[in-house]
Image (cartoon, rainbow, N blue to C red; front, top):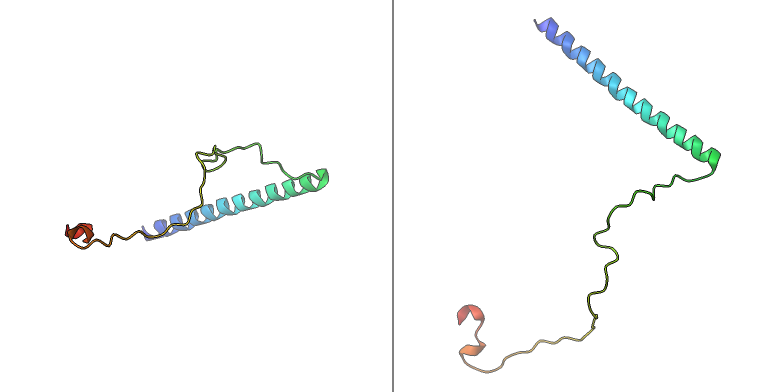
Length: 88
């Protein structure tokens, strides 16, 4: 029984390695074909046909941007009104 398990594991490992190697070789062949076609035609591949929505791009302005100088305003009146909100 242990021999059957070992042979099954080895067979699956070999089949997985062959599939992985085949996919790698296929991707290298596709890359080389695209490279050769690009060199012969002198054109870059145009991927601009695929347009994705741009959620942060080109929105209409929603208002006027105002640049101001801000300063802290203190309430110097003595008494409970000048206490922090957590102590009121």
